[in-house]
Length: 120
Length: 120
DNA sequence: CGGTTAATTAACTCAAAGGTTAAATATAAG
DNA sequence: CTTATATTTAACCTTTGAGTTAATTAACCG
Image (cartoon, rainbow over all chains, first blue to last red; front, side, top):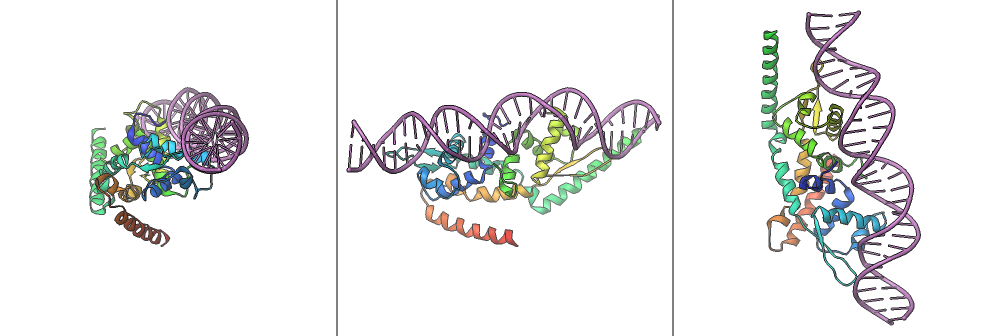
């Protein structure tokens, strides 16, 4: 269950759908109407409307009113939170530190095993 | 619906749960058994086991066998993909003034590069 | 062997996600 | 006022996700 007061969870959940990520990508080139956003997708307009609601609720887009159109624009604020969160793990995919960490973890484990065996 | 062959969707979906992110955080300080991982959470062991399965399926953790223990270790590979994806939007939270054209040119170049890399 | 510990699988519940079609709303244009 | 266009809401369906308890598997230990 995704808790509603958990910004990161809401953001990640919103991003976990290729349609929604495609919408964000499109909005990166500027404000667009719902119909234009929906065009490339093989789904009904209400479906796209729902995706937009999810993105809006996650704070990833904002909407205004222009006659009968509801133009959407990108709001990347929550994406900064994502970038910050993932940056904490950077050292794990840069292999130098990765190997060292794994080595140290292994070493610790073996020491604990030896201690346990000696005590018993 | 999250498509199974879509790595980013699977990764984001796995990260959209605070329990799973907490598990990853714990694994950042080294391999641990399932029971130890489960300890801080107010849920049953099978529930944690399921979370681990989700993380494993997303390639975010790997498991080995040590007697009756199944130690888990972090695998940050998919997190690099997340970092790469989100980095495309960096300008939107960094720049106050409009550099849209430059951004789009860059994005297109990077996307082409990624496609080539995946096909390889 | 029999018992204990670690972890998973099975079977189930319940809520939420993602989609549909049909109806409703809002605004503009004749 | 009526009609066309843009979009949302309503009602519904089906699948998935997250949790539960009870049973099962796997490995160790005395």
